[in-house]
Structures are given as structure tokens and as C-alpha cells.
Image 1 (tube, rainbow, N blue to C red):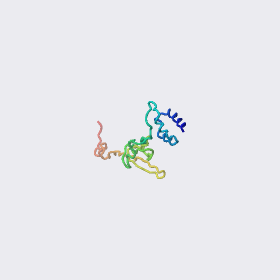
Image 2 (image 1 turned 90 degrees about the vertical axis):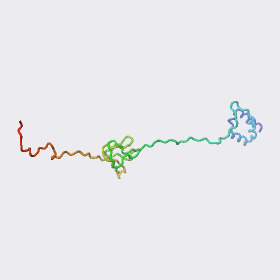
Image 3 (image 1 turned 45 degrees about the horizontal axis):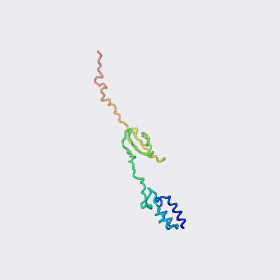
Length: 169
């Protein structure tokens, strides 16, 4: 037993005190080296590395959180409802992917935004066969002013002056 203790001391001379943990001391004392802890405390400290035996941590290290970020909303959805009047360029729907498909008089942007191409009213339709929802714009017929009635025309000759004829002079 004495020879084994000397071998252990020879190994420990090269190990700094701060690297020997409580677990190593417990292991050595269970293995039959009961006086190991006493001989360890008699070892000289190694220069600048001096200190006591380091134990296990009493508090676990706190992990970093993966939350704490948020982005503003993208303002998606319907901007005009059915029957509402739109002018060319009005956005009808902002969406991700074609939830609503463009119909007649409706254009689609690069980001799937549907917008009006003509002045008219929005109309929503659903194709029961394909289950596809489409949006179209029904154009408003422009009211063109009708020409003046002939009875009120200034250019129409009057009946009294129709019988008389003047000779040009």
C-alpha cells in the first residue's frame, strides 16, 4: 500500500492543484487511498496557479433565449369589397399566393396583389367545378350626353322663312 501511495504522489506533483476536482478526491478515497486527501493537501502549490479544490457548480448556466423578436404585420387581405367602385390601379386584394385569382379587368402583381384595370364595380365569383375564387371588375358604362333634339336646333330653318326666297345681291 505504501508503494502505491508514492506512485500517486509522483503523478500528482505534475498536476496543478486547481485541476484536481472533488470528484477525483472522492474516487481516490473509495479506491483504498484513504490518506490521499491528506497527502494532496500537503502538496506545494504550483507557482501562479494556486487555490483550493474546485467543487461542482451550485447554479446551472442560464441558456440564451430564442424569442424576443417580432416583425410588423404585412397588411394583407381584402382592400375593396364586392360591389364597391374602383378606378384603374386600385388594389383589391393583397395576398400571398393566389387565394383569389384575377378575372376580367383585373391585373395581378408580382407579389400576387390583384388590382383594377378599368373603372367599375368589384365582383366576386366562385367556380364550383374548380373551387377557384375569382375577382373581376364590371366596367361602368360612361353616360355620353345625347345630341340636342332637332326641335331645339339653331341650324334648322324656320317654317315662315321657308317660302320666301331672297335673291343674292
